[in-house]
Length: 226
Image (cartoon, rainbow, N blue to C red; front, side):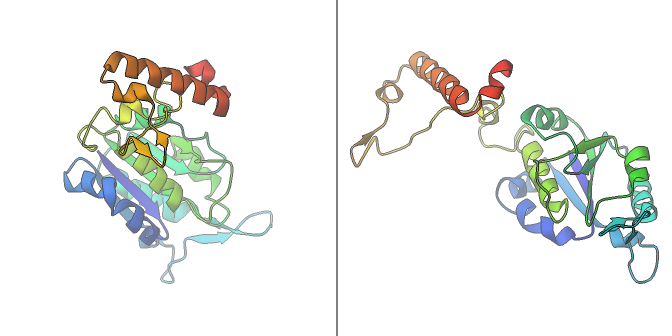
């Protein structure tokens, strides 16, 4: 899979995508992430990519011309399955969306800044909009990093144990059950005996019941998806 990201501050993506699982995914050749400085397509020698909004009001808007030229330039090199704009007023990212996008071949992400991007770019180029929550960030870079991580870890071969992602929270409409590791007795706090029993059927039953209970108490809104 290849993911291209258009940004005015691509440096913000270096750390989250250059370490840990995302770094290993790229080192294995399973995931390519390429960032592109929007100012390459600036409208003048000063690197301008934003301007005042029509109708007045506080805040600058990212201009049509640089974004259109960037998208068209990159699209001339490959077909993108989705052109995604990271925006707080888009549908909220969930596991189902991450699963779907992990099956794609090429994605193009647009990181907004200031008051956002000219609506005409959204109307004519963007095929999908995604929010990571009901709050506003200074720019779309951190949201893009979240999306790349959520997608990238689902690519076969990225995780050491490919079944790990299948047991994550939300994959089956439930939150994940509690997990424990050694020692079995820490300060008198005991690991549930069933997990030490070696009976895999009973362990699976316990985990399912725990997942149901945790989901019911913490996220009852997910129950309809279970």
